[in-house]
Image (cartoon, rainbow, N blue to C red; front, top):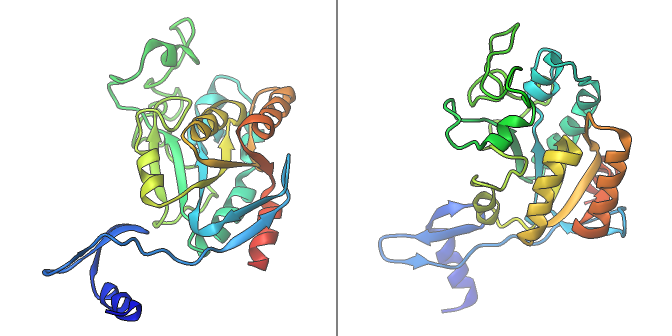
Amino acid sequence: MTDANRATDRTVLKRLGKSTNSWGVSKETVSLVRLRSDSVVIQVPAHPQRVEMDLKRSALVIVDMQNDFCSTGGWLASIGVDTAPLRSIVEPIRAISTQLRSLGVPVIWLNWGNRSDQANLPPGVLHVYNPDGEGVGIGDELPISGSRVLESGSWSAGPLSGLDPSSSDIWVEKYRMSGFHDTPLDSILRNLDVTTLLFGGVNVDQCVFATLIDAASLGYDNVLLSDCSATTSPEFCVQSTHYNVAQCFGFVATSDDVMTALNKA
């Protein structure tokens, strides 16, 4: 059988699986051949070096852009944290996610969404924002809205207004600073045949950074989008995060430069 005939045969098989990680099946045949599209390579200015990436094997991961962290009625605001810096990145995130989505790049929203019984949370996690046990902590009701802090399915854990997510996007709940621990994120990315991750979200020096470090340890290529990430921490924390990402764990670029490259692809 010629290569052309084999290709024709494979196109009539039903695909089982996600994206390129799928089998072709029929009553008579199972094809273990993964179908791969041609690469779409873009070149982006970055630190410490210019980066080339394949859009066909890339995904955008947005961390913790949810009401409890970013909204004026959310958890952090209720305990006196100025959340304005976190809301300042809504438009850059909306713009880059819209453009990448239109090109078939997966958009993944990685949000805190705890069990209502908190059975999988150790005291070290609960202690972070309720150090003396007397405040409003994870799972407690917010004083104004009554929504339970970072609880799965609640307004608190829901996405911040203005991000314009799509029904085609992928949602992953996390329970730690890192989005890889005890979640399906790694399995999802591998099924999508993704090797390069573009990161944005909050806080850049905490949950974004922790997730990016774990991604590097798992072998992913990482690009932190500096204008799509923010924090309520002091500015030196941002500088330290950018330095360490570029030094040890990946690259730092801007979404504007990525979108300029996308327009040329």
